[in-house]
Image 1 (tube, rainbow, N blue to C red):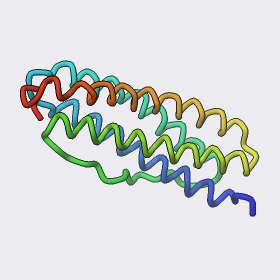
Image 2 (image 1 turned 180 degrees about the vertical axis):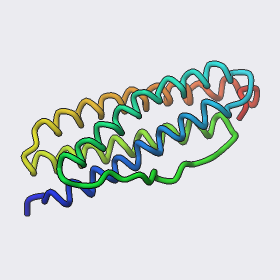
Image 3 (image 1 turned 180 degrees about the horizontal axis):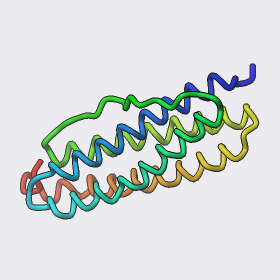
Image 4 (image 1 turned 90 degrees about the vertical axis):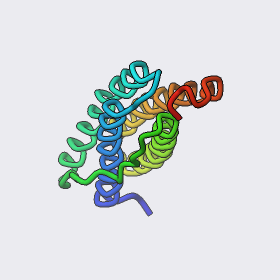
Length: 150
């Protein structure tokens, strides 16, 4: 059975909720990260905000274009004051987002919206880059031990 417009809107709103979560998470983490690597981590987190906000804006516009009402409710934001856990939360959220975007791209293809498929593939590339960068930092975290604030 083909994907309906309503199912696509519902899925896109789930994705939008994830992007809203990411914006809030990156803002909070950028502001509250502590420790000797605060400046670098704060810049890393702050640097991701614009991409996530752009993704959220695209998704909101697409939901509206399909006749839906864009959600204003983010997914729950995992809070922590531990720098390593912040990075792990980012890595996990980006991993989950990549998977949901893959599913959404399949739905968009079934629905026949090739433009949406292409845009989602671009967003998958962005999210993969975010995941890889946070993964690189996490991979070397043991080198810093407790001196890195986590």
